[in-house]
Image 1 (tube, rainbow, N blue to C red):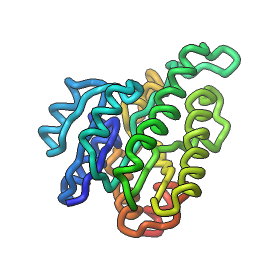
Image 2 (tube, rainbow, N blue to C red):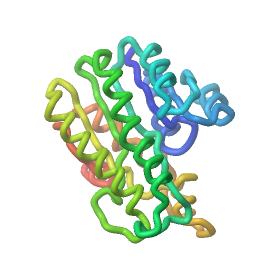
Image 3 (cartoon, rainbow, N blue to C red):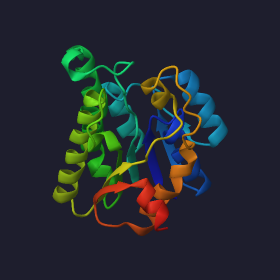
Image 4 (cartoon, rainbow, N blue to C red):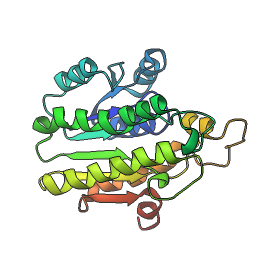
Length: 221
């Protein structure tokens, strides 16, 4: 039975991915900072909960200890940063540092720890269209995701035995997306589960390492 670690599994895309893998008979370990949200999700969807902050080295060590052998790492845990989204000229630098700690350094640190366990496995880093498009107010989050994209590309080049993907899931109806648009109605965005088939296709087909858009994977499926 294959094993996956999904960070940020208490809600949104992370939870949807964890639940889909469980339905495929995977052993899934999920983490999130909010134990009160993670543990009920784990019970309902059938995965193992290890609550904690992925920026904490001790928590990352606990995750690695729980995954002596691993087939899939999904670095989904993410931070939007300041809300409402400020322009870069006024972005508080301590908050920007936190965005990079969550979105760039923590995924890399966790990947470093888990590389020995992954063998010929898969690493999926959750990206965003803000990594490649210049949207006003998205400089903090978008530049962090752009950095994550580049880390993903280099890891793929350095580890040809692995499948290493950066995936843009598109705009989804999540709590983080709502924070990006405070007071606005985002009910027209699709649910996170709508993007899951794109991720499952990557796992099934194992295309070359690189950056993919869920919308493209869904259209050509």
